[in-house]
Amino acid sequence: MANIKLKKGFDLILKGQLTSDAITPANASPTYAIMPDDFQGIVPRMDVKEGQSVQAGATIYHDKNHEQIKVTAPVAGVVKEVRRGERRKIEAIIIEPDGSGRQVTHDKTAPVKKLLLESGLWVMMRQRPYDVVPAPDVAPRDIVVTCFDSAPLAPSLMHLLADDVRYVAPGVKALKELTDGNVYLCFRPNEEIDIDDAQVMTVQGPHPAGNAGVQLANIKPVNKGEVVWTLDVLTLARIGKLVKTGVVDFDTVVAVTGEGVSTPRLLKATMGCSILSLLQDDNVHDMRIISGNVLT
Image (cartoon, rainbow, N blue to C red; front, side, top):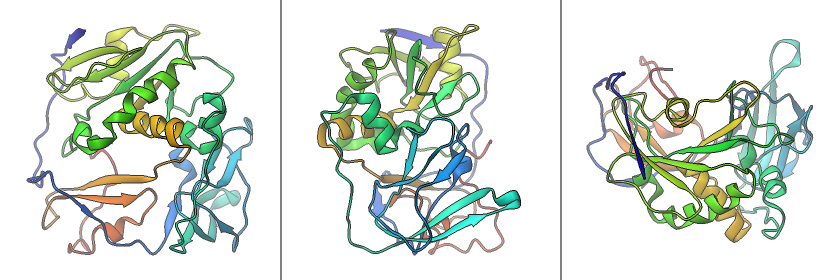
């Protein structure tokens, strides 16, 4: 096990930090959205129309340049709206849930690459350089998994992982089939776990120590002509669960934090839920709402 010590950076202390590790169910969201801008490098081509009923895990759109890359629905329901902007750019696909719980089951015996592409989990990984969705026809030199988030107000990823830690090893095994190089797992000290087929690293230092790009630069920088993939440990566990069960887990835990929040908390929700549904218990009408890292 190798240890990386970083000196540059700064841990910004903001008001509204979590005071409890308890995870509670979020309020039901009236709609769920898929935002194509979340998946840089993809030119969307719709596979469904407004008014069409879909299952959770069903293909919503694919990439124009790599048709095998698919983005899937996080919930079962009806496609309520395909929202377009200037020059008919697709800005969001809105799904109204039907509460049926219908979900696509994938063939877990299929090759790992095909399974990730069909399930939609492929688009949750990133390719370096450029931080875009990986091209399926280019094999990565290595794969880097960050197992902590050092950004202000961010929760512990290992705490959010909870019982799904058992899917980390199957996830690593699956990723090893996609590269001839190494799969690196980067932890905070005292949070690391030993996983076969993975190179376990510990990283010390202030933010941005949890940034996959920073970790990569200190492990083995990307040289001209090389490609490396990055993802977080929660995505890794989803991959492991998919190859074990054939089903994608669209559940997620959201940290609702900041000075304007009445009670900072962790909420269990479904990907794509409305942010306002997470803030029903807070008076945030005059507040700026930030989704994601407060520094970006």
